[in-house]
Image 1: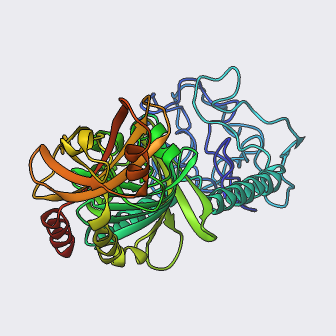
Image 2 (image 1 turned 180 degrees about the vertical axis):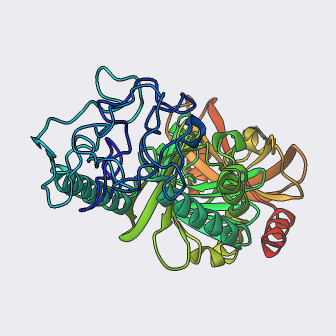
Amino acid sequence: MADHEGPAANNPGEQGPDTAPAWAAPNQGPGAPQAPYGGNPQYPGAPYQQNPQQGYPAPGQQGYGPQQGYPGQQPQGGVPFPGAPGPGSGPYTPPPFPGQPGPGQQPGAGPYGPQPPFQQPGQPGFGGGYQAPPKKGNGLLIGLLAGGGVLLVLIVVVVLLASGVFSGSSESASKRLQDAGKTLSTAKGVKYNGQLSSLDATLSGGFEVTSQGRAAFNGSWSSSQVQVLSLDDKVFAKGDSSFWKDQGDFDPSGDYADNTKWGRMSSYKMNFDFKQYLSPASIAKTIADISSYDIKSTVKTTAGGVSAQKITTYNGSFYVSASGTPKLLRVERTGYPSYALDVDVAGGATAASDIKAKVGELKDSFDGSSEPSATVTGADNCRHSATACTTTAHVFAARTGATGSVGVSVHVWLTSGTSTGPKIDSCDTTGTISSSSVDLTCTMSSSGWKNWAGSGSGTKWFYYHATAEVGGASDSDISAMQTALDSD
């Protein structure tokens, strides 16, 4: 392996770089005029060549040997330099260049004993670019250090991969999330469990949402335990009187809002669109629209006791199962509206049938979207008869968004002397209402009326009172809702 600071070191027995000896004539670089003795040999150990162009025949040719008249000519019988063979002795090899070993010599010893190395190209004072081979003593150490560094980097990379830091894990989790979204897009429904907040309403509990966004809820709405049905533009709830008063803005004078009946709420009270945010198709589309630029982080965690990968985007987070068939385990949304819900796609297959059964209970529901008004008038017998009092209740109901005929029930009672005086008697009547008003009659003929009307003498004062309850869903309403659920 070559060192990084110069060319590879010579193998044992190799010659060093072919450079001019210190005593050679100057300017003997490439293209310079030939020196009197023909320049260096073509390769180390090659026979010394005289230059025929200078009039010196090559070895083996006639006239080989020193000639008269060339520059630097030696006297007859002399030698061109110390140690050179004499005239007539045949071809010869010049002595080793300084720094090169001769036959039988140790490296570094010249013909006249050890000599310092001559200046090399690339060394200070020389204009060439060649550098002498550096020492190799630190090669093994550098190799060991480099090897150790590679091992350390490898260990760090393995740890980071295991922790899911690199984008590879994020891409894998994103792919699993996309596959889970595709499964969700064809689901018949989804079950959720967790918390949902919309404006001033916070619901905590279990949700069922069909493919078309029809939903049922069972849990707490703020501080009240309730059940809720959200069916297109209709919302129904079953809760106690405090719920209806606080959340439904409905405080009837009757006692029918007692958590035993379903009641129809104003649709704006449930200001959350289940179809837009939590239907299977809407969640699937939200997942499909996620790009790599939307993902802020991906971390390993658990959801419902299952190993999961949490993918956080700018709008919320999605938890997808870490192994096996990709399943969406949990969704979280920030901003408005917000929710944090565990997801059960398999359980959602019965969402439509579960909700359909609850819709059947709406036959006895009441309209809590607005309290109906009832005014009462008495017949002549109420002023002249001591045996009976017949009253007529005029019922007015808003019935916003309702269709068909719904049941109406009216409760009438009388008080003596003042509006808050003792109760004299009461009666109840029922009917139907298909528009905004209806008149219903009832007669009081019990002992209460008889005792009050038949006793004493002179003028007696009494006051009429009435409450009305209007049905929350007609037969046609219920049939239409159940038919729609059959298509989910």
